Length: 190
Image (cartoon, rainbow, N blue to C red; front, top):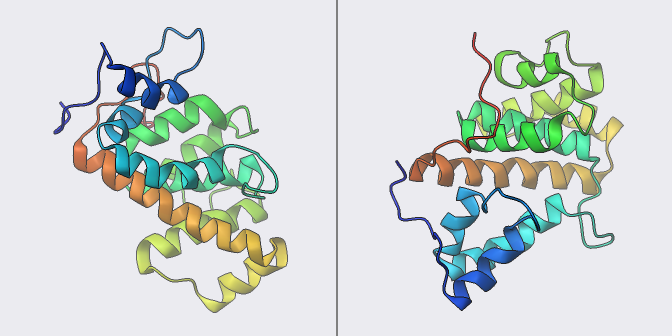
């Protein structure tokens, strides 16, 4: 049971205006609990909307330049490391297979390390990035050099902010105790 009251129908006209952009037209699925949590605090919703949009909505030149696959590997790993099954499940169900992750790679976001055979070398760097930031709040020089050989400087900055943003998302979801969406994937069992 969530610790806060989520915005729920029937919505006032102001609430409807806040929640409609997060609804899928014609979908029987209601807006995600996380968006209903944010909508219950309009100033916070406004403050966070542009960063989420930057990472998830391709609108060059006002959006991230990372590939969707790189983005999803990072998001899924951050959510797994933060034990945030809610957000992990939403992203796995919505994006993981569409961006080319295999079932073994999806499992490895939760159960594997950067040396898991499911990951090719380039993807291993993304897992290392998330793990080092999660464990130390920093990056080693050797990892920085390896990242710089694969991604442009601006993309490395995007990776750092993406990792931090999804830590914030995980903190919100876990702190509020949002229940997983009924249609979303669940963590693979050991």
